[in-house]
Length: 389
Ligand SMILES: Nc1ncnc2c1ncn2[C@@H]1O[C@H](COP(=O)(O)OP(=O)(O)OP(=O)(O)O)[C@@H](O)[C@H]1O
Ligand SMILES: [Mg+2]
Image (cartoon, rainbow, N blue to C red; front, side, top):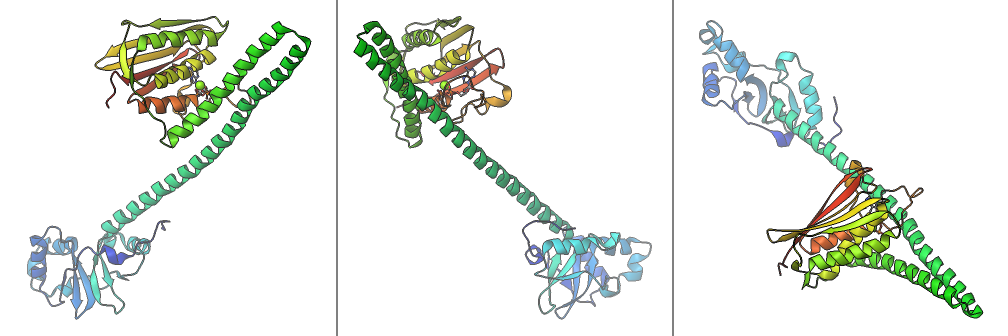
């Protein structure tokens, strides 16, 4: 039996140094065992050299047999001792020592082992049980370490994969509005030359929407960099949360275009004054609502606002695509989009939810999500009503 673990030597595991000279009477040694329940064995040492071993179990067994005490009690202990105990060097490896111990006859397997130094002098006794416990701990540790190492490698691979996916995504996301802007600008030039003012106007609107799309992507990337560098500031001020929700709902209706999706705002209390960072709260809502609008083809997007115990709760729920249970944990990881890159139908860089989560944390709140794949998703945000500053 061998263990692939870091090697320990037996010297550090010496459990006891109990020893007696060979002429000591058996009943004296027995008294030692009676006196200390934790004493499992005594080495017999002559000068400094080990010459035998008596274990509690074997000695007491001999004495408790009929007439045992009378027959052996007064005899020197060496007569009832094992005179060829397993003896090993203090620098022996633990796994080798266990191997040697376990190769002994069954009745001796758990007998203590004598440890000696370079000059074969007695150093102490090792308990086999203790060695096995130590070795299994080392084994468990190394297995845990191996698992951790394996997980790290996997994590690194994942990060690499996510990063390269992100670069592909961002390049794509940046390139589309940039191409649109350049293309539209060229077309506008032609419209101008020909004096087609209506055409020029339409193209200008398209150009503006592409430009603001581009700005949104760049802002997201910059925001996340700022958050990661700890440079994002929170500016507290009082505002009406209900009004902010209604405004956000309006923007969502614009985002939905002509998709058959209703947008509802349900707030029992209006106005609801809170002190927080309105720009950040708006950004949080925009991120959640733009997702809801993006991933919902029909049905409803609802915005619910409630106040409870000094906190406000906002729920953004939709009747859209939904999220599979196994994907929920990846949602808030930067650059993660659940759709396969090759078949993805929706635009985005996969930064929205990561930024959202960070902003909510900065405002002292929390976010949770529940979703049924194919049915819809609900994000719940809790924010303090007043800043804690
Ligand atoms: N309401 C939702 N319904 C279904 N899936 C969602 C919803 N919200 C988020 N997801 C999934 O989570 C992923 C990550 O969302 P996130 O907002 O972080 O990125 P994105 O919307 O893809 O890109 P970005 O927000 O940077 O434009 C989305 O790509 C989508 O797969
Ligand atoms: Mg998003």
